[in-house]
Length: 476
Image 1 (cartoon, rainbow, N blue to C red):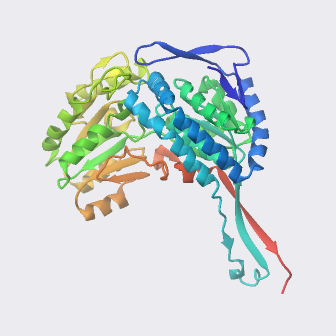
Image 2: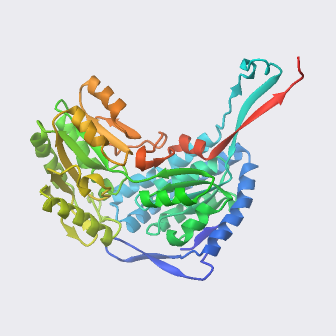
């Protein structure tokens, strides 16, 4: 499949190609170009034209284009789902759920991009001057947006960046994950076929190691939206220069379970929230902090539910957990579980590896200072630790460099309020795990989990800039 540079489907300038392989069985799905630095510079050059075209296109015309793209995404949802499953190893049922949200994200963006309201300024409140003046604000697109996306949700995370950017009137250069470029290209095809101005969107395939620096450091780029590792995000913040940044980075999401919790609800939620997409979700449940008085009861409820997760071929309808994105990632996850076992934790179920597949694991008695607890796992395992009371549980939840999402299970309103006030996370869920997201809600982390917010309305705000206008009348 060719890459997209300003409306043209083409190969790399040096003709190089690379294979996209299924992580589950290693088969070749397709080939894509290996974009060069020259290709990236060409895309940015054309994006300058695209930014001007987008800015001078009325909002209603942008809405019409996006609504057509949304309809095409709906029509092609099964093909997109099959592509997601093939290049990620994600079960087809999960892939269909992801693909089915594509059209709705584009429609949300179309609406929010048409709602760039300003505000009036009470200049007459300024002592001595202002009565003869009128002030207000205007929002306008930033211009060129660079979007860099990871492999784990190759449709949703692409659309949460490019749809708001285009809706707000920007041009976009997208660099999707090297492991999952095909989904991004098929989504881009929806926008092209819907009539998007050619220069408004480019999709570059190939290594971020050679393309990333070129894209994020270019002074013509006014906004970088990145989802990925904390290390890469830190590098971007160090080299990007003066521009707007949204960085959604790593996580090690905690869930607190108190004695008054509904353990059936809590165990059901953790059995889902820890293992969807083989745990390769930033807001996946990684750390379960359970009151020690109910720890045994909670584990008794959790383990059978995890053991019931069907593991196998992602193309099979009844599979609920497929492969990780690569055999190397599976080996890393397996090593982390093994290290925890050697440090005294107990693997109650799962944790075995076969190629890129790791069976879903529950590990109890985990030292909160261990790698399995502190570092982002991005794999199908939950680390269970105990705490004597709520204050200790919150302290353990906060004792981490990350702060993306958290959950708490309790039936006490006072506990709920305390958790909302004291847990340091960008998204806090009461009586559910952090693995839940509405596409319209603000989404982003605290501490080392990043800066800025996604969610369609928030993303539109992040991808526009505000100007203050003062109209001067006669001096009274």
